[in-house]
Image 1 (cartoon, one colour):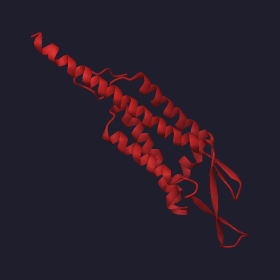
Image 2: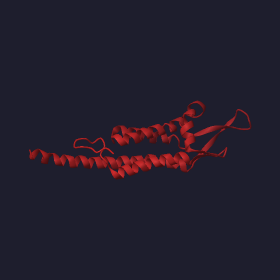
Image 3: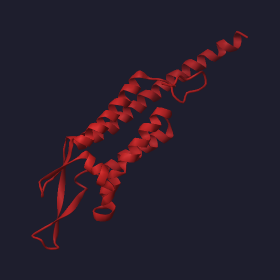
Length: 172
C-alpha cells in the first residue's frame, strides 16, 4: 500500500474505503459465477461469465442494447483500477458510464429473438434477472460507496495537512 507524503494525495490509505473496494471486486467476481438471467420463453439460465465473454457478440447477432449493457464491464473495471490511483473525475466518469450502460441491461429493455415453429417468424425471449445480475449491479454501487468514503477521507486528509502548514512555517 502506498503511503502519501505531505502534498501528495494521489493515494491516501482509507481502511473503510479499501474494504468496500475489495467487497465490490468480490461481488463482481461472484456475479460471474451466479445465475444471472432466466430467458422466460426458452427457460434457459445463463451465468454472468457467459454475458461477460459473449456480450460483444450482441453487436453482430442481437440487440445493440445488449452490447451497451456489456460495456458496463470494462467501464466498471477502469473505474475500479482508477479508484486505486486517485478518486476524482476519471473515477466518477467511468463509474457513471458503467451504471448508465448497466441500465441498458434491464430486462424490460433487453430481449433476443427466438425462432417459433422453425420458421423465420420470431418472438422476443424476455429476460428475468437472477442473483448474479443483482450482484453485478450491487458491485457498482459498492464501488461508488467506496469512492465516496475515500473522497471524504481524502478531504479530511487535505484539511489536516493544510492545518499543519502554518506550524511548519513558524518553526523555521
